[in-house]
Length: 298
Image (cartoon, rainbow, N blue to C red; front, side, top):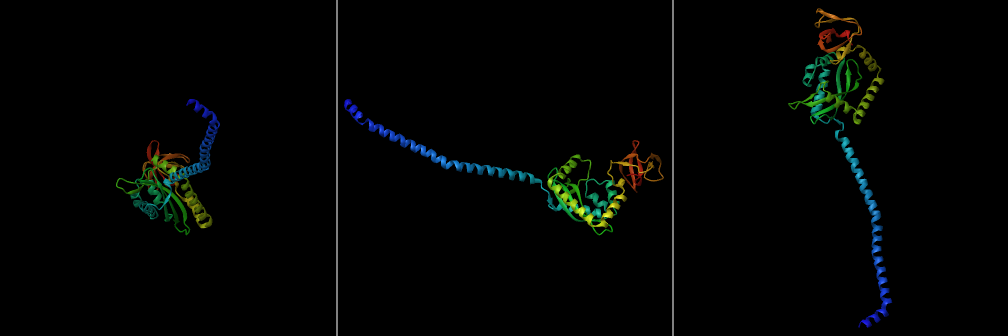
């Protein structure tokens, strides 16, 4: 039997080898074709899908960055309670109502009162617009106030822009935080002022002011004269250094009959402590409190 098998294998070997060769070719074509098919179909699609994913990632990153940038965007007239506070404050200023202004702030000094009482040239603040940005916490805002400042006897108002810091007190009432020595708040205001949307607002208001002044000769002349007549000593902040404009007496009390403690020469400087009323200023002189008439200081 074994001899018969060998004889059969010998007679049919070439056919067997041919069959195996054909089978090998078919297998190569089959698996190779599948690989080529995958490459042809997945290559461009993969690249397109990857590109799409990259674009989506880039767009999402851009959106997230834009969202992060706009989380504290400048808002106009967004908070009615804050608007009411600001409008009441400037209405009181136009009326020279220092008592009302004191109730709307957490600190209203004699210097602040002097600025209000002596600003008799101010008739009113009109067309008030309130712009806010979040302050140091959720209960505070940096506020930029745009207005038209109406002067007594001048028809054309002067556009203006002021900055304030408002916050809630322990009773939940909104007040203007009026403390220049609060370094943290001052830094917050300064940082906010440098932000792009605030700089745009400042530029916008400066342009509005310049256009008003340049287009109206009466307003321009009035502002120039006002700058010369304003008592800068009374308007200066507590703690500022004031300069004597001429030789003058330094007195123990705020009247011309009080004891003379010494004299200032023109050009001498003293530190302002506060406004003392009746146009007198309390100063620091030789380590003690003293008084100088405001018209003699600048």
